[in-house]
Image (tube, rainbow, N blue to C red):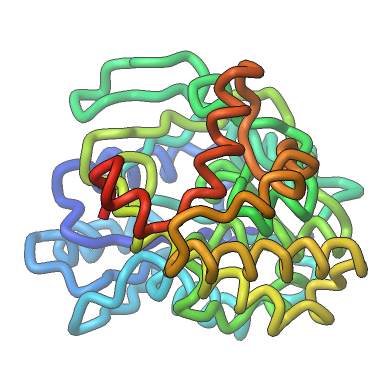
Length: 313
């Protein structure tokens, strides 16, 4: 029987962690191992983890300093890689969510024929009150995502709602610091190595409370966004063969990188508008025609012009 390993990242999570761990205890299909990577917590997170060792198959990896969300998950996945076979599975966990009791059981049944399967979630706030019945609907998340959309930064796989095959680990690891969202990186490899399956089942309560690593994080400035996008696309192009990008996908990444570099230094790039418009379905989330046109035009605006006329830094 295949094993399931949960990789959990924690950081100063005392407020919600016990509730999360309780939901792991209640799983109808129990995890075979749980690797918790504590990312340099300064509160009682480590104590909470240690108090649950007798209730869960828990292994704790403690980092003396804060590495960041991506690095913590990368560390946990490296640990899992040494303990799992290619036919085993991995589930990613955040410290502040609450899993449905049948989450692992449901995902394990549904992953057949795919490399990765993911479900939906209810959205709750810091007090545990439901704020939206569907994370997928709230985030306008499309269950069908092209590789070009992934390259452009549109990810449809939320890591804490997914289960994926351990056979992906040699491809995914190590996760570079230029990969800002680890689940997007995993999803790209899954898409090219067995495929991704979306199911409508609610498998967790996804908590957004203002301090999330992703869902409630501060919006970066335009200069930060462009710099991050540059590093992301450069990383993709460095791994284009491992990612098995088609010629068209690689060319799309090259054109997007060229535009990103130009936007950091040029005020306005009208010559890019035809390409942006032609690729609008891969570059932007679904929106009204007017909103789409606005996005197309703004994507031709560079940082110097944005600073002067829109007050963006």
